Image (cartoon, rainbow, N blue to C red; front, side, top):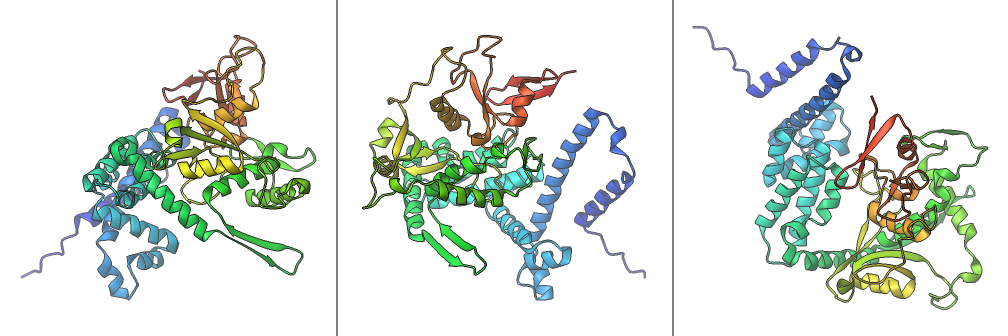
Length: 444
């Protein structure tokens, strides 16, 4: 009797069909497709990539025995070797696969349906994974975590990974408002205490005329330093005699890598410090003054379990998945401490602040208005743009010269050089979306 043929597993059949389908269009030239067709193909490819990634992650989570067959430490090590994938990428994939398989089934289902992409899934998964630690001092339980996961998945149709991470930092205010402030303040207090314990700075002579400086400082201090250095590293300061090229954001910048620009900015910053203004005995806030913009509710400033916001400054690389600056949250206690040691510019909701509406009394936005726009907008407000607000121009939505637009916050928005030029380009129209971002469309 003939032996029955080995039945091919449905997963292998699906993979073969996908490969066959792609092979059938391998020689098709996209340039001959219409603009709308190519746009739809790109969207479809994104959905297919998400669904294919979910399948791969689902298989990885169930493949510990694959690693055992070759003596590998785990399936990530096996996968990295078998597919020539960087080990760190494979390990991150395995971590995500295990979280999705263990307790993030809502997110896994959305990825399986192509409703979120892998980058969004990483962002949401990271946020959800941190919630049990934030809630450990509260009465909230797993149902709160699931509600947060479902809410972020629902927002994925509107927001990218960076925005989802930002929403995740305030997710408890949506799904558990009764405990959100206390939980966030307690977590921030732990982070600040840990940051102080980890703060270090080392200097080592390299023997070739250079000194290597390595430091670990709290986020608030890192943001302050980055803001100072940005004044020297901003590409708009490129000298006229420097070779330039067009950057990814469309602006001419020096052919110098960002880390090198920041290194050079640091040396210029040190050279620009006035030694007569340095503290002699413990510091003097009246002579050594820095400006810090802090956004906080007036009542919260008076409470111990509350939090405040430092605005986004220059981008300090940290999270590999974030490509733009973001605000830092600090405790109310830290805000009060900064008020004692630095020149504090209060953006206190409900309290007094600087006069920000100057109407039509002047053409240009004031420094105070620029600070307020940076606190509000954080980055260029063109849809999808992540250029830091410190590198942007203040743009009048309603032209000051042609349409008598007012120089105030309602009529102002931050735009990078590329999108500022688009705003004044008659071949483009721009529409303001409900969330305040501007969508640019080429006129037909």
